[in-house]
Image 1 (cartoon, rainbow, N blue to C red):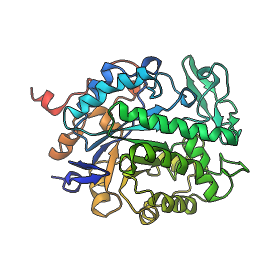
Image 2: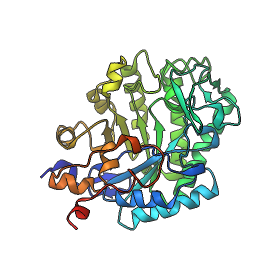
Image 3: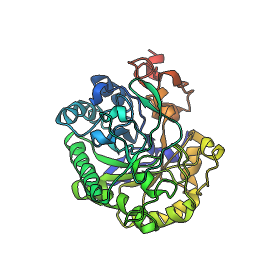
Image 4: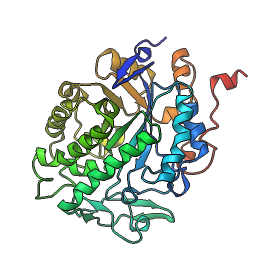
Length: 361
């Protein structure tokens, strides 16, 4: 039986029963941006995870970039999230909400014809997923310096709303080529004000957002996600290892609940990623570290055993295996995820994957 994944761990003010984390997974099953009762079933099924990090959730209408993603900026959305957090807590589970602004990875179709926003007016390669199909990305509008305090306020408000919805904490999404990540990387940030250029300036917005969330929730209920080696959404940086080592030194001073690192994936390497070693990041960060990126049981056990991480987050395995903790404990076979049902749709490929208990009657 695996050992290290099933040791309890203190994350902020929570004592988690295991180190099997459910990664945030966009599923696009919230029509009009409002969470549904089906989502309560979905998350409730997975409540044995040490911690669920709920799907990326826009902090404002400006932050939307995909159809049918649930928001956290209206009263209706807050109320609709409450049965979901209650479903998890009813089974003694724990759940954080991932706060999201997609930045340039959006399209005017989401904004009544207005341009998406970004640190600099640089269009990403590829196509946006709009309500009417795939469309080429447009060149975004560079945010003015005096607009950035409003972005910070949106994160502060979203943190307050998440707590009102019953979440145990929030994870700030600063990975995968979305707005905060766009500010961090010099491939997307060509600003000449106090938010561009030097390491200190490029880190400024994320640190302001983190401190705003901490003011509302306390540091023990705030995590941050980063993808230092990521190329997804056309991301590049000239010197990621030096920059992210600097950034993690700054984040270490905040006493966060955790830092969540997306490892270099095969796709990143194929796209020419400058891989930042997990060893360098582990040495740079003084706090709890969660890693994710295609881990299986054996690799996760090894990562914790070798002190490369404190916990491991699983994505696609959690889509297909709501009882992943049971399956790992028994080293039982895993269901295969059906990629055709990942995004949009109904209960099929969402809440209908069999559990071991279901299989044995």
